Image (cartoon, rainbow, N blue to C red; front, side, top):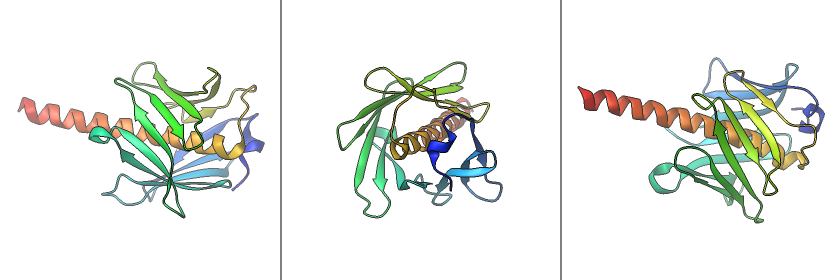
Length: 173
């Protein structure tokens, strides 16, 4: 995998791996990070970049929140608390908090906002791209983790929407 710092000035794209339950984040065909579902029946994902490996899992009331665990020790390093409607707050063990927001029709753009209201990244769902503004200042490891976690949250929201649609169809029958 290539370091994330070499990707800031150019576009990052997501692609679904054809034979697995995973996704790759690439820049010009080179892998920057990956997100892999542990199994079909599990809601856990393994995230990996040059900076590290993490496990993302659902948590909180009704499974609407999430936790980020260190893959080696399985100790929580961050907790996500969802807000009603969309978005929420991701708080790391060191106290640093980021806000996730989704905007647009069917939530096509997800943003990560710092405590000082700086937009650190935008994930464009339909275009399958990640935009990191030129002025965004964030260590590579934390930025990579935020990108992967935002993609995970998009997948979580899509799964929740599919489940809600299924329940609505069954209830209407």
